[in-house]
Amino acid sequence: MNDLTPAAALAAIAVGGLGLLWLLRRIRYKQGLESLRDKVVWITGASSGVGESCAHGFYKAGVKLILSSRRSSELERVRNDLCALKLTTPTHVPRILPLDLADVKSLEKKSKEAISFHGNIDILINNGGISFRGTAVDTTLDVDRRLMDVNYFGAVALTKGVLPCMLSNGSGHIVAVSSVQGKMAIPFRTAYTASKHALQAFFDSLRAELANRDIHVTIVSPSYIKTNLSLNAVNPDGSKYGIMDSTIQNGMSTEYVANKILQAVAHKEIDVVLGPITHKAAIYLRTLVPGIFAKVMEARAKKGMGSEN
Image 1: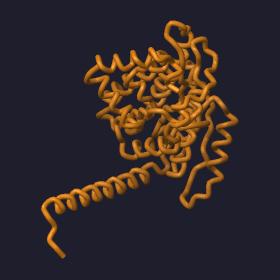
Image 2 (image 1 turned 60 degrees about the horizontal axis):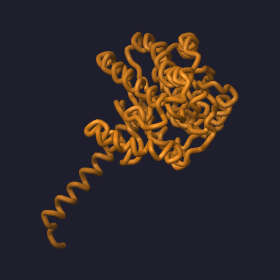
Image 3 (image 1 turned 180 degrees about the vertical axis):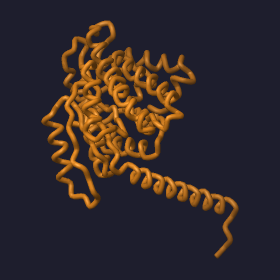
Image 4 (image 1 turned 135 degrees about the vertical axis):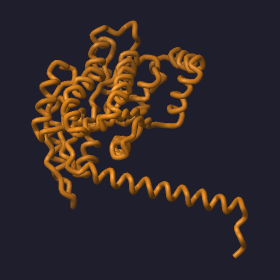
């Protein structure tokens, strides 16, 4: 056999190095999953979409799940689906805790109730939320407040509800499921992007405050996901949008996003952006050359809201 050329040798070393890195990451991921067993995990927005897929992923990891959303019947369905899974590893029957993120004043009590199930909360996944379609000038202030209540104040209230317990235990993990629109704003989403920008800022600040307390904070910012998000989005007057956007229809699967969230928790990642390279590039464009980004968004706005579909 002929000796390898220097270029071929370097290529072989690179491939071998990448393979080793992949193997080490898989080992680390498996260890991370094993460390989740018997942890108490509270998921909001668990009756459908990403929340439901997260419930499946964490349930298979052997955690003690608490499932929350407004719809009790759908939570029951998710729990029944989980309990019907034929798994070889030990599992725990999930607990159900209906709540409405828009009713911010009720969430302190809901947090205490969640803690009472198992005596603590190890991992909180703030996933529940709603979207919006419309122009700022037509949007009532009540709609702006509703988006902030559900997407921002609801998550903040639940986080503050479980933080004393985590601090007392000396450990914990808080996940905020945000959006790429929490890092860059696009037209016809003012109420939504404002709530997600606020979410990003709060949890970035919180992470720094908790850095020495062994409480981890992860922000997950997905692009378009194939869910009912646009169907359930609200119009400027508060009515339901009721249209399946093509960008949503062709988005990432909920299983893919949930798996990335599970990995982020297992690896204790800080900030995870999910989506096509163009959306990730747009975030850097907004940061590095905001003038160009503004021109791109102006052009998008001129095409009208329908162009986003």
